[in-house]
Length: 78
Image 1 (spheres, rainbow, N blue to C red):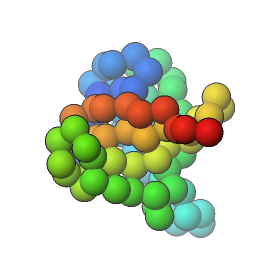
Image 2 (image 1 turned 45 degrees about the vertical axis):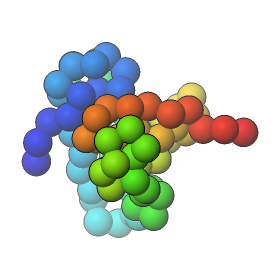
Image 3 (image 1 turned 120 degrees about the vertical axis):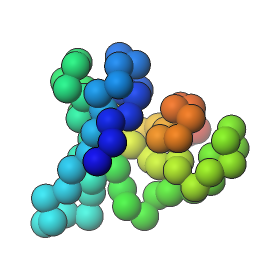
């Protein structure tokens, strides 16, 4: 599993894991201890890079869209 750019600290230390009991993938950063949950059903094509790598992440502060290919972050519209 490859490391990704962390949406919070921008370090190359963001990775994911699943425990098999939930429908969520957990993401965490080894550098800044940031954690977020991904809903497996919320994926789409990124408008920035045109890849199918844009996912919805939820953390303690709210939800946002993040592309694991180009690292584009889009806040959720309320």
